[in-house]
Length: 101
Length: 336
Image (cartoon, rainbow over all chains, first blue to last red; front, side, top):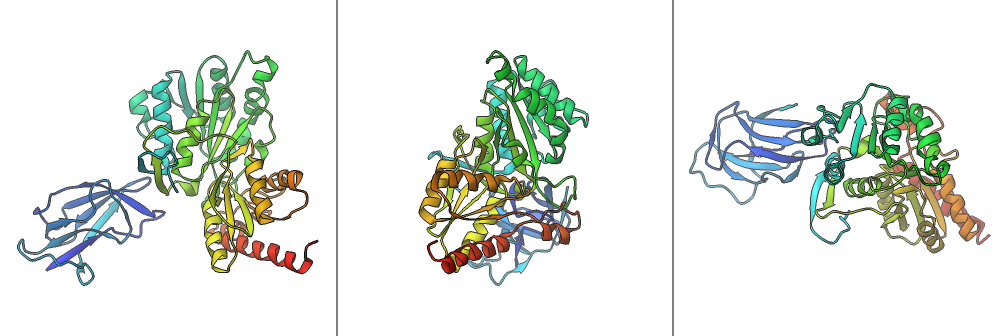
């Protein structure tokens, strides 16, 4: 199954975030709880961790990109060879946890 | 909003635009010092000084006690003795404590000494209401507009924060740079090239034929929201961002009002002897009587209760209502 990883929220007082750093390249298998991507707000860092295991298939928002809360960061899948669809509409959301510091 | 230089641009958080302007000017001029609470290793109350302590060290990014009179006094004195200083007052409410060295010394020094002593001091401060109650919410900029020798600027976005701070840091006399708590969550395009926003020039952000809305700082965003609503009701609002409160760009404002025939001012500070009163009078000095409305907060301290805070502050709905009333009255009164 393919999942979309979305910018988590709401984050108090935050309108947009900037992607600071991905912690794995496309093809990397993230374990549950692993740090996937760090985001930067106007005053804090947001650590986004995998809420389930998943293989990073496609980075949609790259380091330095500006993104809204709820917009897609990337696609992950259970298996490495599952085809990635064109449209994100029907995809399930990747489970995640996040911490603002 | 565009970066205005015509060249490349880079998107920055509001705080980053401030840090960039300071970093460039500190690199260029080793006499430039920054004084303030938490401006050092902490990086500023809004992280607007982040990275500067690491680059320029504790001698040039100097943490101070909570003592605004001493901070502005030291900043003015150091500037008079050959440094250039930026004094950071975290909340504009506490500028009141630093007014004596600013108003009575820094603004007057070059007049008292026939130009022999100049005080290149920038006081940077953050105004506005955002959940922090009666003594951490005020917009006192109109208090400063009438002090001869003092310039006052107020950015509304990252580009103007960068450009105005750059210009302020090249001035020979004192400048008060007033940002706003609600601007810090914002991001925007800033010129990749060095750029200076001219002090004394307003900027027209939106064209319209029916009413001129004059505002500054965070209220620019409220005015743009109201202008969109008015446009849906068939009313064209021209929005002018003052950027510079002293000197005030009366010519740009009057030219707009000459076209639209009506003026609405919007400010978060009190309207009595406010920015809008001065804007309206300057316009009338040039054009004679014009239809005018001032929109501002209730004449009350701002509560830390969010419901009462919102009730006190001007918003897009109040501006829209004021414009409807202004233009509606004009219709009933004919051409009088």
